[in-house]
Image 1: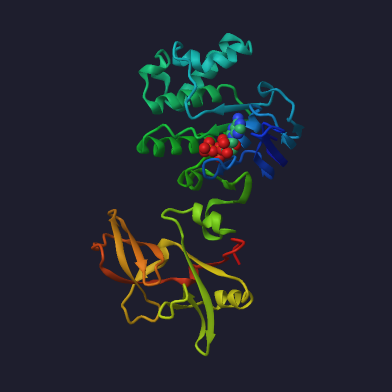
Image 2: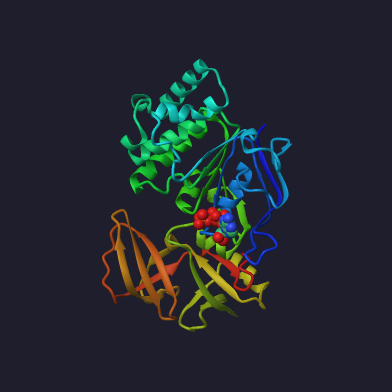
Length: 370
Ligand code: ATP
């Protein structure tokens, strides 16, 4: 069993000095055996530091790190049963593809025939058989990244660690390698921990996603569950592209029901669903933010009671769908995502209405979803 358990794990760089920095703040995370876990978050949130502590490239400041049953805090990296794939590939330029892949095994004095078999097997899996004699400089970025993957595979680790492995590839190659790594996970049936700042990679690759911010974990769950039920404003805004729209407002109740008045502008009242009404009623004293994903808007006419009139700032027809950036009368910016090609001119007035069955209410102060 090769699950990875982080218990109250912390990292402080340069402790005791004026440059001291608390990069990872007592996180708890259980990565299951054979799971593909993605650590995602903005630059500086501590995801690479967390991965490097698991790899043994950074010392753990406090807390416990276990791989399987074994406490690994003080175990040498080479004895942790892990293999890491880096963003910059870290290949030796003077060695052939085969030698690059074999290097770690040679250091471990693995028998030659065993090395050959493992390199051949990894090359087959990755489609590198024809390239085993080449040097890295004679390979494309995608092929180099495959060699780096091959070097990890031949070691037959219990846990694969990936640190932004696709960042140096162009967009098309990234999509292809994303699928290849996912296939590799299915084939090798190993535990994989993957760090990225790219929410699309997180959504498409992870069995579960761990969203991080400022050295803390904001939410851990399956991608779709995070998308549909974000725990807080941060996760709601970070996962999903274009990002969720956030509207501040006040709640008013009259004989017709409970209304959310956007930015307090009386003409911009939307009637809340029964479920959201209940939440709003029990949080009367709380400043509220309504969260609505761009796809949960539809075009409507001006006389629709739920209409939000707004001016087009930018229209982005993408073919299958269009993103329209709007400025509402309340001064709030909105992005709506409509299917098909919607031609709209800058300054044009459009009316959109939100689908409140799919909206979320957040406490604006704490950021928590209500
Ligand atoms: P990125 O996507 O930019 O790599 P990250 O989420 O992986 O970001 P980390 O590399 O883990 O972030 O860094 C977390 C914080 O720790 C950052 O603020 C960074 O500046 C700081 N940090 C990282 N390494 C060191 C170091 N060796 N000494 C001091 N501070 C460091």
